[in-house]
Image (cartoon, rainbow, N blue to C red; front, side):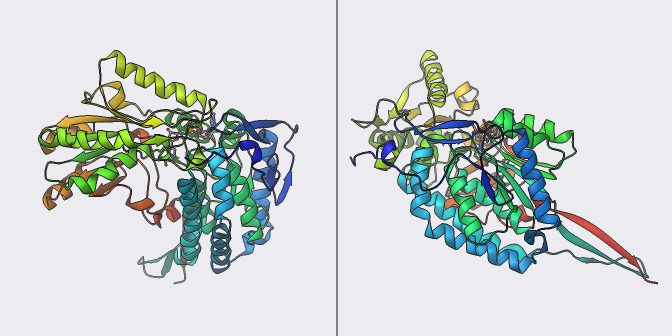
Length: 493
Ligand code: NAD
C-alpha cells in the first residue's frame, strides 16, 4: 500500500477562508470560519469562511450588477462561449491541484478525484460550444403579425451544491447557467468545498468577468437558507437530500422562484437470466461502491432473476471480498466516507440488517495502517433482501448494496418502481423487445441498457422523478432549464 499523505503536509496554494463577491475575495461578514476535516484521518486541514445572510445579499447584488452594468451582461453568446471554453482548458491545466484538494476534502481516491476534475473541464467545453446554439423561433401566426420567441437568461441563479461530487455538480449547473448568460451565486457544502473555491479562481484567471460567479461558503441553515429565501434570486438549482430540497423549494415558493431539485435515489440494476453476466459484473459492483457509495445514482439495489441469482451472488461476493478500503491518497477501491456522522448512519443500517437476520454475502476489508481517526466503512453486499425492507427502500448513502431475487419481467418492474425514488435504472438483457419495454415502463430519469452510467455522460440529460426531484441538468436540455422564453408578437399590418 502507498503511504497515505498526511493532511498537514499538503499546502493549499490559496486562502480558503474568504468569500467571492463581485470579483473580490474577502472575509465574510463577522469574519467567522469553519473547520474542514480530512476524512482519511479526521484531522482539521483547512478553514473556510462562515458566510451568512449579509454575504449572500452582497453576492446577489454583485451578480445583478454584473448583468445590468458589468462586462458579463454585455457579452454576446459567442464571447461567452469563448470564456467558457477557456475555463475548460484552464481546468485541464489544473487537474492535479483540483484532484489533490478533493482527495483531502472529500476523501475521494485519487483516480476518482482526477476523473471529476476532467469532467468539470468537459462540462465547460460542452457548454462553451453550446452558448451560441440555443435560440428562439418564429411562429406561424395571424395575418399582419410576426411572432417570435426569445431565449433569455433567468437573471441571478442560485446554486446549492452537496459535498459528494462538488466539481461535477458545479460543472453541470454553473456551466449551463453561465452558458445562458445568467450570473451565479454558489453555495458549496460546508463539509467539502475547496475544489469549488479553486475553480472560482481558475474561472477568473480564464477571463470570467467579475460578478458572473460569486461564491459564499458556510452552513446550510445559514448561507444556504439565506440564498433559498432571497427575493433577488430568479432561479435556484439545488442538489442534495430530499429533506433539504423540500426546505429550499418551500423558501423559493414564497418568492415564486423556480427550482431544479436533484435529490436522492435508490436505483436498481436489473439482471435478467439471458444477460451477459461477465459484462455486467464490474458495473453491478462499481456502481454501488464508487465514491464509497456516496453517489445519488448509486446502484444500491441489485435485482436478479431467480434462475441466475446464485451465480450473480457468487460473482459479486468474490469481487466484494477483494475490495480494499483505505486513505484516499492510497488510491484503493474505496476511500473513507465523508464524516463520522455519515459512518454512524451507514452502521445503523447494517445493524438493522443484522437485527432482521439478513446475511452479508460478501464484504471488503479496511487496509492495515489506515489512520484511526479516518471514517472507514467495510463495503457490504446484503443477501436476499425483501423488496419492502428498509434496506431496500431507504437511501443509505454508503457502500451497501442489497440483492433482491425476482421472477419474470412484471415482478422486476414492480420491485424496481416500488420505492419513493426514481433517479436511474440499469437493465441487463439481450432481449431487444424487453429492453424497450423496460426502458419505457421504468419510472426514473435515466435508463441504461447493458451498461450503467454510460461513463458519466456530460451530454446526457440527468434528473429524477418522484422524490428524486424534478428538472433536468446535463446535456443540452439543461440550457432550457437555465433560461426562460419570451414571446414577442409584432403587429405590422
Ligand atoms: P444536504 O441536503 O444535507 O446538503 C446539500 C446542500 O444543501 C449543502 O450545500 C448544504 O449546506 C445545503 N443546505 C443544508 N441545509 C440547508 C437549508 N436549510 N437551506 C438551504 N441549503 C441547505 O445533502 P448532502 O448530505 O450534502 O448530500 C447528499 C444528498 O445529496 C443525497 O441524498 C444524494 O443522493 C443527494 N445528491 C443528489 C444528486 C443528484 O444529482 N440527484 C447528486 C449528488 C447528491
